[in-house]
Image 1: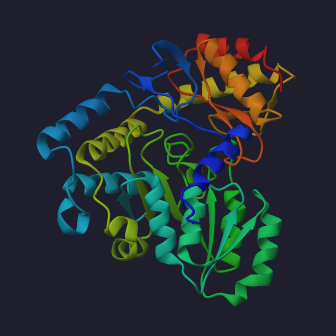
Image 2: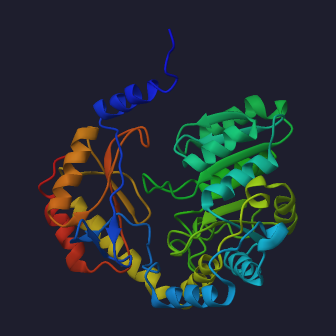
Length: 388
């Protein structure tokens, strides 16, 4: 009897539906901002990672259009073959200057940056220690590298240290990988302690600054600057698609490591270069981040105001956070979907995040510098009717 080799797909989808884990896209319309159109209705946008409100900034639009007019819409090939532009080098210099590192290299996405960096620097004779709550790109890079992999409990430096005491001597190289800001919780990694451990056990440390760049630190350089660790030896990975309002990823580190990645990171060598408009928009964003610290100051005023109001609602469980990401824990996927629906019906766009993305269901709220106080207050007024 012939068996359809694709028959399992429908059964798997049915299981996803039963668990309330099914996902589908929601189209938004108009320029990104504090409000967007969803299904023709204007809603307050608490679902965006556009923390500084730069994705719709006229200066980024102008830079992208000018780049299209000068260089065209696409890079047409990999940087090593046919796709390199001086614009890419300018962006890399701006990243390295912001991060205070020797050099930087730009990838076509943050996901590709993590895959390329991790798989280039460790392999089958090596060990990776990864925070349990790390982003999928870090986890995928670790698996693809072929290195032995140990996940340590979230931000638990004691367990991390114990793992190294037991295992470090068995491997050639060792790499610790962590998010700096955990995207589905909002808390920060214990960076100083991780650096101390890395130095003691001769480990490399790779930190994903996707949600920290532009947001944390006196100059918006990220979690490394926030914790006063600028200049200490580590590998910083990040994205240009969140606070910087564009697209792409980067690695910032020593000159030798960046030179090595240009020769060994497959997701850089064999991928079409970042497009000219994305590159130009990101470069414009870095200039704005440096020139307009008041944007970051306004973001943190909004974050602190919303946290203050939420803490006045004892029925809501706010997960620990030190970032513009505020997560309200809910008892089940069904409760999270219901809460998201209630918010949407009240004119607020905030997503339900459910397993397997996270261990517990929640509503994830992202604060922007461009949110008005009245919009934050409306969110809290609706949240009063939602029970955690």
